[in-house]
Image: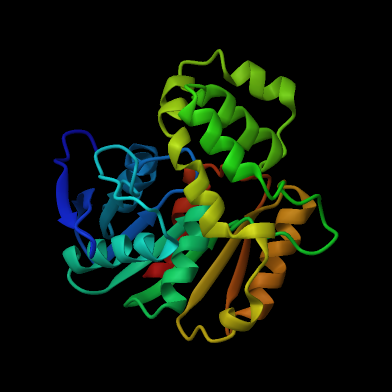
Length: 264
């Protein structure tokens, strides 16, 4: 998406939401998860652009978007509604991780989503793995406010994502770390979107009546694959697809044809 200009739309509370559009065809909106902004979705958008008009956007508090406090999940749904309106009033939607949960919540709230694909929304089934600590969001906020965004990112990756601490320490020396630190203030937003305990809202999900595809990586942890299987069996008519050999960050060369097939 090199050279793609950044546009703006206004959410219901007046917050400016930055987005880009590329390609031609039906509107397809990509929603990223924690520690990502619209730039992270650009490589996938480039591959999808020959078939769709692809929209990537900065969720509130990220990149070029604004951030009106206090935060509420409902405001993030409003933000997506504003992007859908800018895209023509209805759209296909693909969400990754907490972005997948946001997409599901938006669909359940009645946003005009035509078809929805969700990659590994981080719901946790009872007994599958330890739950993130209930005070994690508060501790992350405290670390950020005390000028320790790097420690906030580490806490999230170790305690919510369950990455080994030594791996995270290695990541802190990578060129990508400063951009992750810049997104640290939004980590409590991702925690709020997923909800305390990462519980799958099964009863509400049974109300979905749009074509839905849930995806996982064949090499992802068992808890994540179990969650996707349960999600597929909960949403009426949902399809499930596992990308062989992939994990939470799937190879876009393998992901693209699956999404093209589902959204076409």
